[in-house]
Image (cartoon, rainbow, N blue to C red; front, side):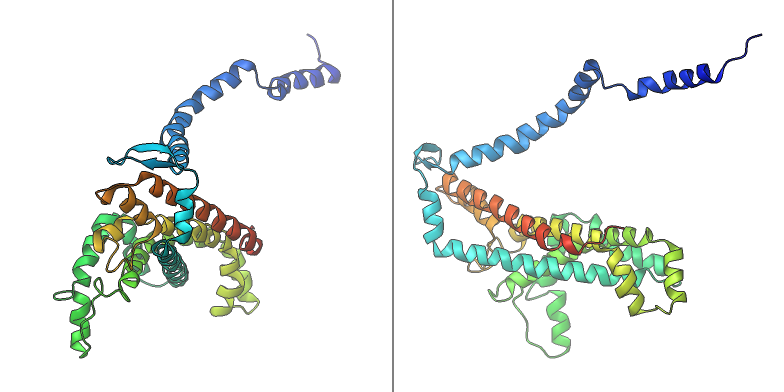
Length: 315
């Protein structure tokens, strides 16, 4: 019978942990890259190539069939700077972002705090408010097209009960963009509510109980405890919501097709019109607008990270 010494036991334990501390082998590195190949191929085909192609087309003209023909330099970008209609497109785009991102985040925050209360039957309301997340853009747009109908729409029917004149929700240039924004807010509120509700669900109960024992309750508890703990989710929703609003297309195409009088033509819809909707397609001019959209998204996102991230409380 042999008795192992402490030295041998220590050396054995070191030997057991030694393989875990070794650097990854060349074979493991190759296999890791092989797993990444499918994702890289998808990104290259559907993201990197279209991005590079759009950048190249923005410096090319078009023949009578709309096909790229010849290098024209920065003439498309010069035309964008001088085109009053493009200036209105930018204004519509920024106005649409403000009319959608701020209301949907504020309303989602209010509803999530309200639904966080422990009340009887609150689960039904949680499901009801989150249900818009299950609707596609086309389905939601068709529903709101029926509601916005000037002759038989539900909204004008409600206004008629109170003796208010009918509103051209989709035909009045001063109201159409707001109508599209209302549709977008309704579509996005379900997803935002799910994100904020999950954030509230991760708040420790003992933290809330401790705050209640210290005298915090009602609005004071929500303002000083719950909302600061939700800042990571709020920051995420603001950034992604802004990008989503800048890229909105389906509801605009179904409800107004950019009208009336181009009052709902945003940057994405203008790109579609220039490239595909008009008979004399101008892919170069549309590609220049797409490059502008890319830089707008990047600049706004960087500004949000530079300003808003400082106020995020990561617990």
